[in-house]
Length: 279
Image 1 (cartoon, rainbow, N blue to C red):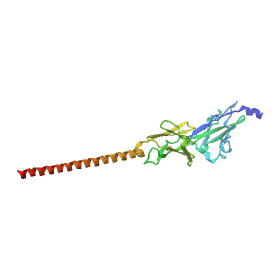
Image 2 (cartoon, helix red, strand yellow):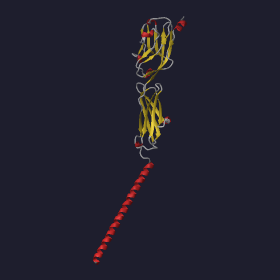
Image 3 (cartoon, rainbow, N blue to C red):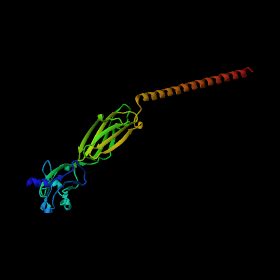
Image 4 (cartoon, rainbow, N blue to C red):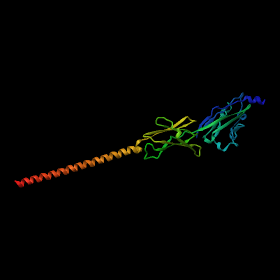
């Protein structure tokens, strides 16, 4: 008889993980089949964490039974009581937190009993990344620089991809770290180390695997921030020296011409004076 009653009730839950946004509400769906009408006082519904068996929400004898409920779920759970007699034992979980992630078991007893488990995953979008450069000034092509890309408040850990301006993957040159805040949300920091080229461009991309959401930032280190390379510097110095030498030579020529003109004028004066004496 017990085996027969067991077969009268069959629970269905989602096969795929349920993805919930951090801070939002989520419905953990659980439905059951039944062969004849029943009253709320006839049904028992129990939600618990699959691994630890901690109570999430209980219902029996026509009312919620929350004395054994884990403290972290207090005032955040409820059933859809108006739909319970129609086979809906789904649980509404409010203000989802990272700590809520895990496997949940739905147990129902009425005209038999059954249970099934589903997986809840929590996701939160990252902020738009920010990129800083170290060092920030006095840069020359050929210098090794570190670009740091930071994004905040996301979950779970994102995939970080660095690319250059032509789309070439630079991910082998990065170091990525993850730090969780009090809410369990992540700050992701990725450092790319490269040898600088003139007008270098870089793209930092963060992809949230649960949300299939991408955040990115494209930066260009322009020539305005880069000092002359050594070769160009020596060329500039050489041109300046040549120009200075030319000016000195020109001044010497002018001085000689002026001196010659003065001497010619003095000789001409002496000739005129001599003629006047002879006359």
